[in-house]
Image (cartoon, rainbow, N blue to C red):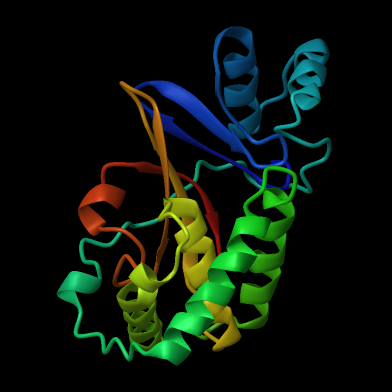
Length: 214
């Protein structure tokens, strides 16, 4: 798969997220047949493979890596069910404001793929730094001070801002993009193995993960 892309199966559709091109799309017909053959390890018609590579979703020579749909367990709990200590105050609000300012720039379509690469690299440097309780405490502080900051709440900007704040504190969480159909909708959230850190678990569990960062 190309950098910044992920896919999942929802309602019989094969859906892709391509951050570099700021788009969601479904593969159907011959392109889907070709992709299904590719991820099963079989070879396909060279013309069809060339057309699929031209879509930007795959790159030539995958290095022998298997092509798998995005999989992650979405927790059943969120901050409302955790014993997190919010630690809200002006210091927390100032840090949250800085995070949101960074996120508003980082989420721009021309920059989002690079933002995901930056976050993935930063989290790799903090491998094993789960610290779930600390992540929940920091997320609770962010949520408690969020109303003080005049930036309209949006799933992506809030998830990116909190992700940035956690990394500054040496804590790595997972950024998740999800989709659903009928009608199509997309969502983004930050989570640990134990809890959803932005938004609610009920909302996140209504979406199928399509791409994860960290």
